[in-house]
Image 1 (tube, rainbow, N blue to C red):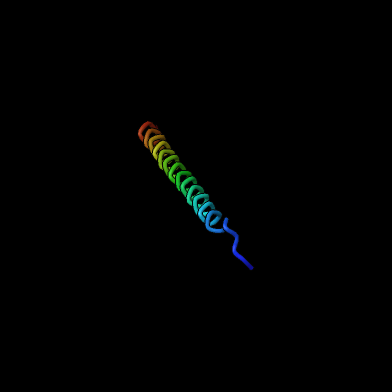
Image 2: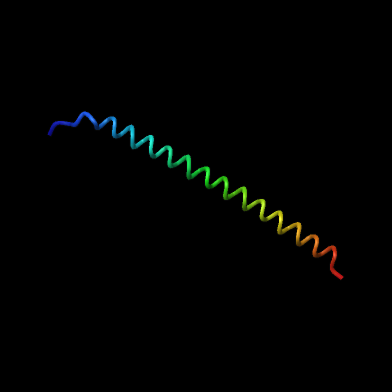
Length: 55
């Protein structure tokens, strides 16, 4: 069975698509981590405020 001439191109295309998807996924992970850490600090500041102002 002869190899089609598109095979290297489609392999490169698949690799490029995979790298692009990996980049998007990594960006989503960093955004999630950033929002998570920001949220933790907000909760900590609210708890500190509550403890300091408790009677």
